[in-house]
Image 1 (cartoon, rainbow, N blue to C red):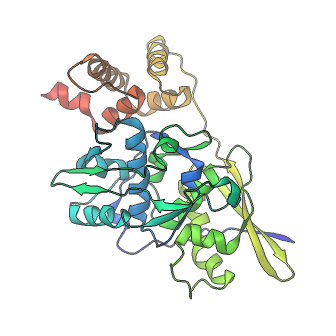
Image 2 (image 1 turned 90 degrees about the vertical axis):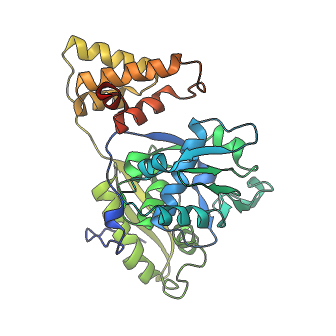
Length: 334
């Protein structure tokens, strides 16, 4: 027997709302499903989940140095996670704590397919400087992270909207199955540990009804209100008890306008040539002026041609970052 439930009453975590600011420019990256499906051995805060994604995205887009270290400025990290606060110590402490959390990777996969790296930390080494963070990625996961065979497109502009850690975790789980329209069925206790961590409030959520009312319903409401997906919970019972859960998933329809201007069409073609997806390029044309997009495009091209710096591995990602931070506008003003 299956039942479906949703709840539109959002419950926010106290003290976290003001720390994050929404950003609407699409900012996707490929996240290997073996990394996406994980079970942390300890609870993750909302900020730690966002940091996890930001660091993975940065490692994919920027090369490591000769010693295998990646570097990112704290300002860029704040922008990537939408951290709208001057409390950098909290940001640093969250990153430091993330370094020590062990994850069980791909816990839904059969044991025979998981290989020898069942569990590990994701970021084994982190160096925190006044304005910069350096980090390493687990040697077992580095190649998989950089060149995933199966992946989900995680859009950081949507990641930044979430105000609850469980909502972000469930949304990512559903993104993996977006094209299928329904997720895999998971034993509810396994899913609870994937969302909350193995040690998170074990007494509070020993019964499914508490996990459903306090976590699933509120997270579904936030996902349906804030993300690009609409999801519904489906329960499968054995007798009178819920055994497994899954989600029905539908992508929200976004209306697009017909581009009639010749200048807009030309710019659209140039953005696509740079590596921006057509759907994203059309959205950018609606959100920004032609002058702003053109200036940022030229800024990106000059950066590509500059042989003094590192070669741009992902010009489209650099363009998005420059657009979001107004680099071209700042340059003109200077």
